[in-house]
Image (cartoon, rainbow, N blue to C red; front, side):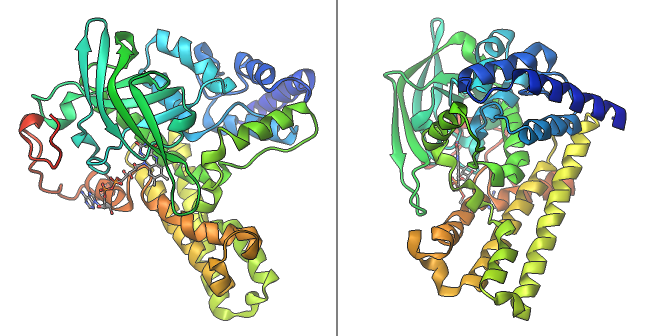
Length: 419
Ligand SMILES: Cc1cc2nc3c(=O)[nH]c(=O)nc-3n(C[C@H](O)[C@H](O)[C@H](O)COP(=O)(O)OP(=O)(O)OC[C@H]3O[C@@H](n4cnc5c(N)ncnc54)[C@H](O)[C@@H]3O)c2cc1C
């Protein structure tokens, strides 16, 4: 895309912002304007609240909105994963029903994939969906479900055929969380936040038209969700941050951050906060220490290389290449950066890094980094699973021997009694 086009987009969005942005509008009204103008999600198709812009121009639009001091559309990881998945596999009715509300923030979403017996082995899940007239009846348990306690809808992967190989009998649904058959129980994690839940489904009900994609081909749909999740691992440091300014809209935004965005408050810390390393070293005089300087340099180099990897993936996307296993490289790099940065923070802060809250450095941010970084190596597929994907699907190395495919899932030995 040439300079002129970029300039044209800048001017168009600037003019639109001058004419429309008003910090005294309600958040809902402003986000509706963004959604209907296509500037809220400029990379989405024109048919669905977007402008069909390539990714580099999407960034230009985001920059202009930020520079203007305006608020963007609603953003949370799972909401955007739902949108990405629906844009690729959803029916027109599903897109009509959900996409605009995703941008305005009227609905919150969660991802009902992992189960107590199936995390890395996601295709081994045993939550079942049985057809019951014009609905599906759902029974089973999910775990680690971020934000389920705030969600109206869930992206559910469930087994619809037990007599085929494990990847071939799964289907993907949108499920309403607020119904009698769904019970959400919060869990508290070691960094003190309570982002996750256990979700129990007992004869929960889903209308037949809320199947996403084709029956028994839910694995392909789930791969779309996971590819987007892995690709966005690099953007975690922005999550949980909040735009500030004067006007009633910012009060509404702050209230939203306190409630529905609460589960993501610690996400910048889970990315390791490489951005804090140099200032912290200067503040504490550790900048003179050659070992600390060397470790900071190493972490910054890793961080920069990881940003370039992410940028390369975006460029590939701009050229129209589909999301591939390369997302795993970015996800793995994000884990390495987070761990390297956490190590540097311990070198700089020493034992003080263990102090929580106002007793600790940066009001406990350093302690929160140490307690949150392990999550990066687990969420969205563990480091080991990313390595398996890279070795098998990028490097073409031989696959791990498998004993659980090529026969009906019903006959695969597993440690749960349910069938
Ligand atoms: C912050 C966070 C948010 C999350 N949010 C959600 C969510 O919203 N929705 C959701 O559905 N899930 C969510 N998860 C769950 C996450 O997807 C799973 O935790 C992850 O896939 C790992 O599964 P598991 O915990 O069952 O570990 P297991 O699969 O039991 O793995 C245990 C260990 O064995 C290793 N291992 C397993 N299989 C292999 C193999 N084949 N080769 C080599 N090593 C292997 C793993 O790498 C790991 O070290 C979240 C997790 C975290 C940390």
